[in-house]
Amino acid sequence: MSLRTVLSVASEAFPLVKTGGLGDVVGALPLALTHEGIATTTLLPGYASVLGALEAATVVREYDDLQGGPARLLAGRARGLDLLVLDAPHLYARPGNPYVAPDGTDWPDNAQRFAALGAAAADVARGAVAGFAPDIVQAHDWQAALAIALLHYADGRRPGTVMTVHNLAFQGKFPRDLLEVIGLPPRAFAADGVEYYGDIGYLKAGLALADRVTTVSPTYAAEIRSPEHGMGLDGLLRHRTDVLTGILNGIDTDVWNPATDPFLAASYDARRLGRRAANRRALQARLDLALDPDALLVGVVSRLTWQKGLDLLPAVLPALIAQGGQLALLGSGDFTLEAALQETAATYPDRIAVSIGYDESLAHQIQGGVDALLVPSRFEPCGLTQLCALRYGAVPVVARAGGLADTVIDANEMALSANAGTGVVFAPDSRDALAFALERVATLRGNARSWRQMQRRGMKTDVSWARPAEQYAALFRALAADRAG
Image 1 (tube, one colour):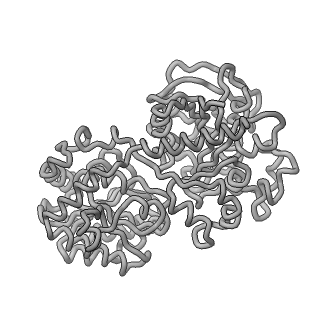
Image 2 (cartoon, helix red, strand yellow):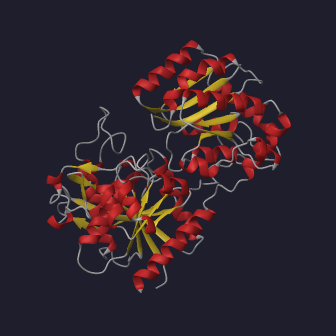
Image 3 (cartoon, helix red, strand yellow):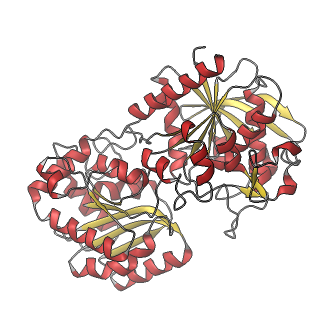
């Protein structure tokens, strides 16, 4: 059987809705797969931002009662994506973050909200939309994983299923008494089904029941089979090693292109690195940092969480400042960490700028203006900011974890002698290791010629979706052939 179509099921897709790297991947992979001859339709919840962008929408299915209210399945296009959108106002017509209420807690009905998404996906996969019969269903993270369980326990023929894990830390665990509510039979509540330490595990179900499992870097695929990084699922993942594959993410190199980026004060490429100085000055001016051309300007664009290792940052900033450095940080997350960083910024107002929240233009300006971009994550499935940094000539300074280890070549003496280093890689996840990494960056930057060569090597690295799309296409085709056989 030849592979023609994929149904991608997810809770977010850039530029329609995004809280992190998941949205970037779901928004970019379908376009990359078209170059492999594979058409993708993406199923999303009907958030206001998604419905508002949907063009020429038609109703292709209606539900009298889907998890507590009426719903419609709409087909259309938005921002270059072929979409199916689950229009269920009682589930998705809510302000702010897709998963979290304004008080900072998870929406109490998240189990039902994403069970509805899974149910719609299973219906579509089994022919509910006239003229559309996907060969593969790809479920992204726990919010989409129930689609795989519902397909597994349904009667009749089904497409091949792929569970893609973007971050194993988010698992979707809910009380066992919801089993019937979310549409699963009693036999599903078993160790080889959806049961997870006495409750229902959405992600666990997808990992256990999918035909194939992928995650977003080869190193992370290895790490999550260990107790240290397996988040309680390492045993299951070791059991499923034969169907587990790590495929690195890419980035949209049209959106992230310093030669054409509309957010930058000056466009540039690897041959015109001198033009980055204008972006540096513009960034310092925007953030009220001292217009210091000699300062080591370090950037951070990240969620502010323990996972990202940024709780280590306040302790090392005084040393960075003492060496004449500066920090430009954009992010949000843990309130305590936000406060600690803001307090440090207030102590050094012309050396540290902390912007809480997310601003797309500032994210681009940080990449285009800083000397180095810091990603000190304790674990990192893939990471996208370091890929953007490579593309923009911002030397990445990363922890040796997951996709960070797969994408950045440490500029040690042997790598530099072989003309191979693209950044600084450090371990372990400690304050001292981070401080030493920043010292190494300052030393490397002291050799202007070597630094420029390192920037250019990074900018020449292929961080596009071309190779990942080839790997996904090969996996999808192999699965479709297995199902046909």
